[in-house]
Structures are given as structure tokens and as C-alpha cells.
Amino acid sequence: MNLALYIARRYLFSKKSHHAINIISGISVCGVAFATLALVCTLSVFNGFRDLVAGLFTAFDPELKITTVHGKTFESGDSVVKLVREIPEVEVATECVEENAMIRYGGRQAVVTVKGVEDNFVELTAIDSILYGNGVFKLHDELVDYGVPGVQLAASMGTGVHPVNPIEVFAPKRDVPVNMGNPASGFRRSYLFSPGVVFAVNQDKYDASYVLTSLAFARNLFGYDDEVTSLELKLTPEANVNSVQQKIQRVLGEQYRVENRYEQQADVFRIMEIEKLISYLFLTFILLVACFNIVGSLSMLIIDKKEDVLTLRNLGADNRLITRIFLFEGWLISLFGALLGIVLGVGLCLLQQHYGLIALGAQGGFLVDAYPVSVEAGDIALVFVTVSVVGLLSVCYPVFYLSKRLLTHKD
Image (cartoon, rainbow, N blue to C red):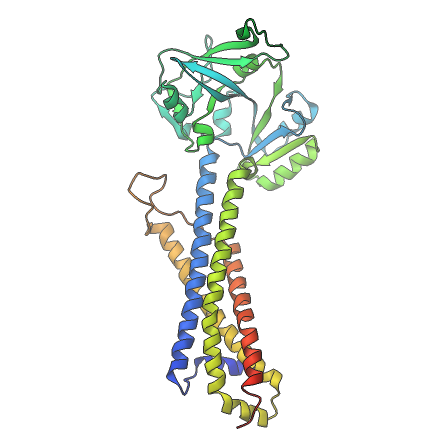
């Protein structure tokens, strides 16, 4: 066994001549433990909110989305795109046309995003789980086309869940100059009827500005033939999303972009990652402050053990061995504090997961009643390494300083 580590461990658990040293050592361990607990819980809460937001987008966003790098549209009959449909891991493929348009209803108007999809959109996403109303999700029949708006858009336009009259939809004609004498001639006008439902993703990006309709209606409105703006994919249950994404990217080449759900909402998740990073840095500074208690504990211990140091020197110990003893002492304090904090933090997070001990607010006022948490092994490893490194660095200078200035003279 390492002699310096063995002596440091004995010093940590043995009774000191001054009882205050034991108390300060205990306070040091508790300080590091509480800082570690705060790190574990904070990072887990950010993970929980990230998973919550990702779950909201799951009902609307596909697992993989293919778009063109150059331009806005690409031919759905492209031979390379056809190869994607034949990949065994692809279970559902839906062609989409997504463009901006203006809608008008009852004197109110708004600029929206019209998304035309194929009939298998219900198989691609869990859209049925976010529908509200007495109707059913359908995009067209033999006579008319239907539009399913977001819940906030329906409220702002005053259509309700089941509007009496159809919604007028306007889109500028492609490659047609504007006639200043008759500006209306430069727009196509169509009508969308309501199937009696609206969707609610609980994200303003969709709920306040999206209208789902049939692919044929969108192509006719925007003047497309067989072009699409995206090809959206659902994979088989056993497929690995990242592996299939890389496989499809190799098939398509650099002309196309293949995005998973996180990349489709990159701005949202990037902001959450930045917030998580900032919180981690702030808590690391708090941990550094907590580690100063270790400095005080070590200072008193070095003074208390001056006679032991003289004995060790008489037995042949050099300054390096003595310095390592107190370095290990400080590192052990931070190590035990880290382990205690991680155990308490993970335990608290698991209790929060199962019992919702800390509520967000009034019942029904939020999407979830309690703070969502998700413990990840990577975060636990990061916290442990952070506490170990910060604890070791915080005691290096005082140990070297005190060991040279206070312990170099014999009594």
C-alpha cells in the first residue's frame, strides 16, 4: 500500500488532539458534499427539461428529416431519394411541402406555415396524441381539402375547433410579376375546411403558426409539380437513429441534409445546453469556495501533526513524502465529500422522479406537476472528476506553502 496514502487515511479518521480539527474536517466534507449534490441535481433537472421538450416535439417532428442543402425543393422522384425508401430500417417515408402563406377568416388574417403531407403522416408521427376536438384527423376527401391548425392559431383567428366557414388561403404565384393595377392577380386563392380538430404541441413555433393539410393541396397552392421541400422518415423500432442517419447521409451525399429530432430543433436545444453549461460553471465556483474549508482543516492538521512529522523525518522520510501525506489528506476529504454528495444527489433525483417531491406550482398550471429530472451517467462522471480535480488543486498551494514554512524547523 502507498505509505503516504495510508498515513493520510489514518489521519483522516483518527481522533486529533484538538477536537476542533475533527469538526472542521467534518464541515469540509459536508461543504463539498452539498456542492456536489447541487451539481448532480441541477444537471439532472436540465436533462429532465431537455427530455420533456424533446417529448413534445416527438408527436410532430419525424425521427429523420431530409432536406436539400442548396435551394428549397428537390424532386421526389430523384433516383438517390428512391434509394432511401428502400433502406430496410426505414418504416415510413412521407413527402412534405412546407411554405409560408396568408390565411383569412372572418376579417382576421395571419401569415402562417402551410405544411402539406401525405396520408401516412399519422403513421409517421404521433399526431393523434395531440389532437383536440370532436372530429377526426383527415387531410382531404373526394370533394374538399381539410386544414388542421395549431390551437393558438385557431384561437387568434377566431375559428374555434370547428369553424362554420372555410378558411381562405393565399400564396403568391411563382415566376409571375406583380401587377400593381391588380395585385390580387399575383396570388392563388384556395379554401381549407375544418375536420373538427386542432393540434397542440405546446410550442409556439407550431401551435401559433402551422396548418397541416394534404400534399396535393400544398403543391397546387404553391405551384409545384412533384417537388417536395422535405422527405420525413420513421424508422423501425429496433433501428439505431444515429447509425441510420449516417448511412442515409452516405447514400445521399453532400447535396442533402439529414437531421434527427435534436438537429431539427437545434436552436432550442442549443440554448438549453448553454444554460446547463453556465449553471455548471457557477456551481463549480461554489464548489471551489467550499473547498477552501479543506485549506483550513489541513492548516490546523499540519500544525497539530508537527511532532509526527519530526518522527517521520527521524525515520528517514523526506519532504516529498510528508507533502504527499497532506496532499492525499486534502484529496481524501474532497473524495469522500464527492461520493457522499453523488449518493445523496442521485437518491434525491430518484425520489423526485418517482414521487415528485418538489412541485412546479399549482396543479394543472404546467405541462408537468413536478420538476422533471433525468440522471445520466456522463453527468455523474463529470461531477466526480470536477470535484476531484478542484479539490486537489485547491489544496496544492497551501500544502506546499505550509509544509515548507511551518514544518521545516525542528522543535
